Image (cartoon, rainbow, N blue to C red; front, side, top):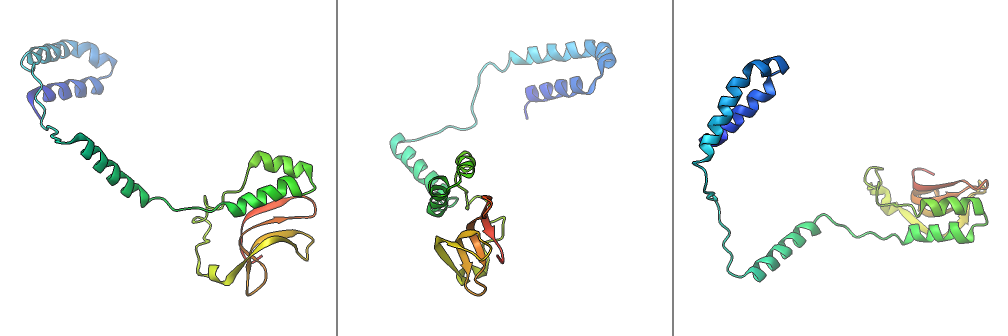
Length: 177
């Protein structure tokens, strides 16, 4: 740190530490510090950078930077398949005979199964013991369900949508039915 930086940091530290009364009584010393900074500014009239960028071929350098950034970003992305949610949305908004539910569902939009997937604990080993029911099937409760079903218990397990006879809907992740 050079002398100029030390003077500035010292002045700012003093100003921040004073209350109003102290500031009033210390203003002579503060004015002296400001005068010292002004005097030292005269000796700092030339800016000399510490580093210099040397690039022979700017187009090549920009392409290398783009490739590097793209490769680094690719590690953060995973492909998602929203077809399940979009088919649910289409069914509820057009095929389901409940205009009130369809109107609400249109305002909410399709459910994003990928947003909270990791938080919900659905990356477990039981995923290979599930089968996907592509059609809406009527359950014993009178509700209709579409989604993953446990091959062991036959209950909803994993992502799915359940529409109850009263028109209410649950869409998300099911555990043990």
